[in-house]
Image 1: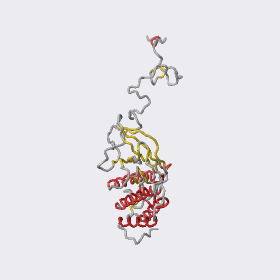
Image 2: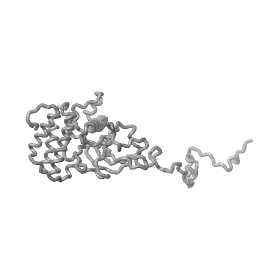
Image 3: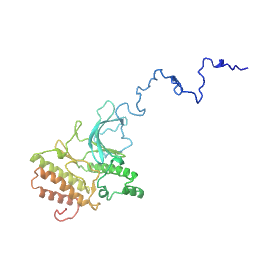
Image 4: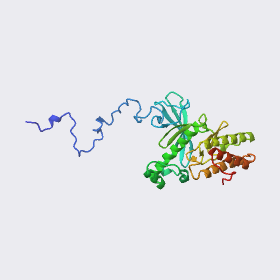
Length: 317
């Protein structure tokens, strides 16, 4: 006969019932006492993301991104084992923030890039984008309607479209020899760009400078050639000002081109071109550019000629 005095369970821990009071000294799910030492982490990275890199903030996004034009500069890091490390914020804006990023294979210096990240829908406001988007279309009518109606889905599409529009414009312009940062890659709403500066210090914006007469004349000449380079591609900046131009040790570089305008294809194109010329000339005039009005009109006429637009004089207002 089986014993009913419990002797057959002597020395064993009694089986718990579903309604037993929880034993603080013993965790059944972990099968060890709570005061036992924790298990040793096999890879020595307790609390770290198991798929994350051994250092830095993330693995390189190179594999999954659309790449910049070839031939690529020699400084571009393409190794699959590279790691991205955040170094701080370079600029904040209404549509996007720009971060400084180091991409490197562990143990090497790697490269510095500017990571331009377009904002999430609830923190983003694209200004005047209805006019800029003239001539830009997507394949699906549902997507076109969503962007026009500014639904959440539509705003996501707009952010991606702005990022890819800037990346495509930079790729075209860099290939054509226009002074713009090299576009390294684009993925979703993040564009990685050549970092323009010295060390980890970004080059100053044109608006920050107080050039002498000779420097001012040289910068005006560089600006004219840069805008003619845009015009040869049928484009104008669309939001040109002294804040969207960097000067890196005397070299002028155009930046912030998500709203680049197809002057011929966009019905507002000539107006955007005229505004770009007017606004940037105002800065040069305020710094003492001789005969600024004549210089502005001559530049505008040159750009119209490059674009193949027949327009008498410089009456663009």
